[in-house]
Amino acid sequence: MALTLRVVNVNNNIGFHSSFSRSTFVSPNPSKSSSREYNSFVFQCSQVEQLSVTESENSLIEALIGIQGRGRSTSPQQLNSIERAIQVLESLGGGVPDPTNSSLIEGRWQLIFTTRPGTASPIQAAASIGDGKRILFRFDRAAFSFKFLPFKVPYPVPFKLLGDEAKGWLDTTYLSHSGNLRISRGNKGTTFVLQKQTEPKQKLLTAISSGVGVREEIDKLISLNKNSGEEPELEEGEWQMIWNSQTVTDSWLENAANGLMGKQIVGKNGGIKYVVDILLGLKFSMTGTFVKSAPKVYEVTMDDAAIIGGPFGYPLEFGKKFILEILFSDNKVRISRGDNGIIFVHSRTNALR
Image 1 (cartoon, one colour):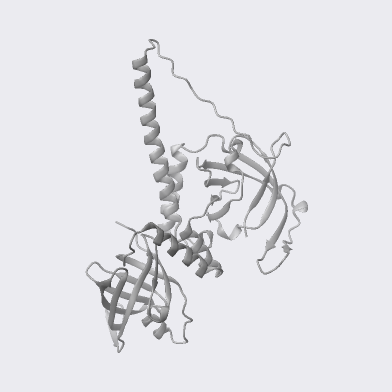
Image 2 (image 1 turned 180 degrees about the vertical axis):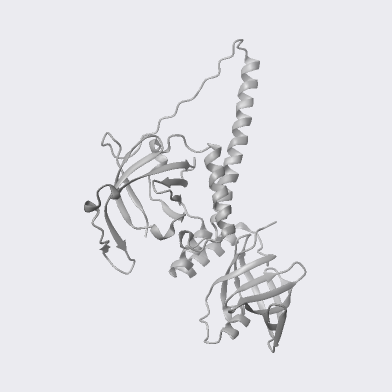
């Protein structure tokens, strides 16, 4: 489901028109030297500002990697990172001026994060331009769209009877010069982050969230990694298992021992641990070691398992050796292949230092 707006300007012309003005510096004692110095100064300042904006955009995109359900699964730490990145971009003022008058705002935008994820709906609205950043709209119809149906299912909301409740506005507080990233704030205080071109990692996480097309997105991401020429490593950190290609068994203990659930903690010195929260403060813990045996390939030995409750532990008889191949890895997402060709997708949960 996606939010789509039909935007019509006040002159009933479809679309947007861009207009840009440039200020001119006039020296009281014009000379070629002073002109060159000034132009050099402006160019350097422009470079610094653009670098800052680009870094801030990347910070926001990185903060959004791993967020599922448009924000439903956001942890307090992730939410703080996202809010900081949004505030920095809005305060820099480095986006497109008068964004609603720019053609860059046209297109199909995917909602990737909102502070009210439960309110995202497939609503189409008639809209008009209020000023350089505000879009005024009125909801008039809505529908659910399902891939397995050749038609849309009407959304039963009597918008015509809602009066002013069906009206609203969106302020575009940031629009990137690439035209691929937009931040908006609504009349009910909701913040929206939208992308035109979704990053491959985000596409994978969206597919995992919906349960559709996961293997296709995994193949695309692995293919991109091969083209980069970089060798993925078993990165240090805490990693949450978010998807695997194996059907789980009825035994949670067996699933936990096979790494099909819970968190994986990779240490600095070849140490590795599985941790699964059970209930009432109890945890399943299994530790072991790993050794790199070939490019992208690791031999893993898990040989110490226990049920942990506070300072106490109950040892379990579990042992397992397997080969782990890293297919893709960066500071946010890892794709690996274990025994019997099982594919795992992990998302980093701890902050990088």
